[in-house]
Length: 81
View (cartoon, rainbow, N blue to C red):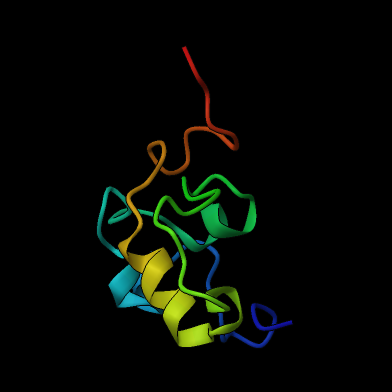
């Protein structure tokens, strides 16, 4: 619905809407990669504070700082050797 109304561009970089996300190998991530789960952040490595998952601003900061597990857009799941 947001895309239909011109409020969200799937082909735009995530940083257009969320500048802080553009770090840790995610600088070139596109909105479409967020939606198809290929952006490279399937989880967070750091231990979350108690009840952190329920704190919107805290989780936005944690996800923005998280380094990509893989190059965004290359796969939808992490691979192991």
